[in-house]
Image (cartoon, rainbow, N blue to C red; front, side, top):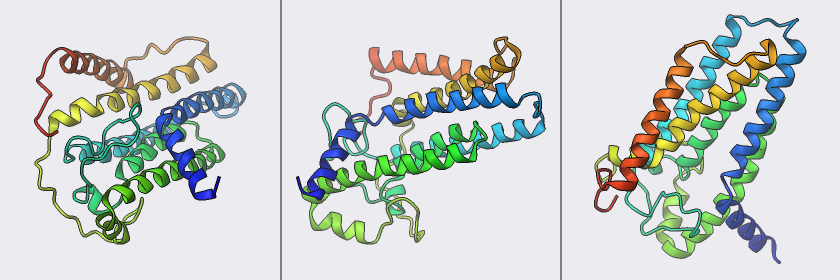
Length: 252
């Protein structure tokens, strides 16, 4: 198999199983966090610095979620969905909104969300290894997606790609979308990420506290409140999506 076909095949496979990388990060990160807390707690007691790190990590994660929400809220149906089972789907090419700045805003959002999680370990090497692994992993996914889009949209895609950076903007010529922003679509599509962000942060901190004190986290703070509130919101939105049409919009 030629390299181009091999990369495309790998990308298609990873696209269908792209939820596995966050799980690997979560397990690895928690193990590193537990090891560090158990090994160094007597030399590095809890301090204001750990609280600052947690807050910074959460801000980075929320920034990723905001990028995803802002992107998804302007996209029409079947262009930026979670098409895991059916593979690549694109009825039209997104070139406005966040897509007028970068070609892969959703993946940039994913990276920032999970970078926030990686930052919770406080381990520079883990953060570096995660970042490298993420971009190698998603490089192949992007390769497969761009190959699909190039075949489907031809010169239209090539013209857009030639002036739009893949991940980090090289210019800020923002082009407003023709479609209005849809909060319904954001609530329908991004409820998972909102709850997951709080839940993962809570699991990290609860695991660390158990490793240090041998007790489960019982302190009522912003993280616990956010986790419970986002969990309730997720459950309600999931019910609404499954049993009603309140979140449905034509063409979205």
